[in-house]
Image (cartoon, rainbow, N blue to C red; front, side, top):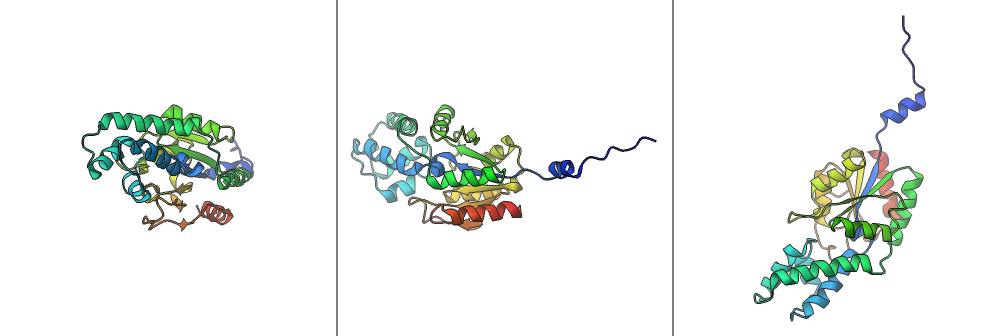
Length: 239
């Protein structure tokens, strides 16, 4: 009779316990991306006689792609004679350069998050709407590549970004079940997409998204501090 091989208990536990992960938006959480885009657009649009205000940006520029928000802004401001395609191309290039050529630094709260997750052996991954090369350059500049943060550049072709599919693909890339992921979102679209994907969600809005509806979120924090990281830890333990 052949005896069945009994594996060590520690080995069985390691195989049966799924990995866990924290996912976040690269350009809107790791840095103050919307403020970067706002400053770029304000300067660019002033040349077309458009005074970009915070409310205008919050209303029309929630989508990361210039091909969506530029036409809406021109229509709203009655600037139908402006060369739309030219302005879209200029905005896209200027935004890309701002993320790769500027002196952006990783937000301090994100640095603390990465340290805490490393200590708990929790995977960390970032989702970006930027073009692949732009996203990679930004990630490297912020030290995320050296920090072991996985990246998925997912240039949006949909009106709403990020979508549930985008979050699911990011989770699949790092081989972590959606139910074991906690997303740090900065907008209602991102939050709802994460929840639709079956993930837990902590929201950290900025001044452009603070008035949005975050119903269903597990936690909403006005700023990303140690308390917010503690909430993430609690959600990870409960998953």
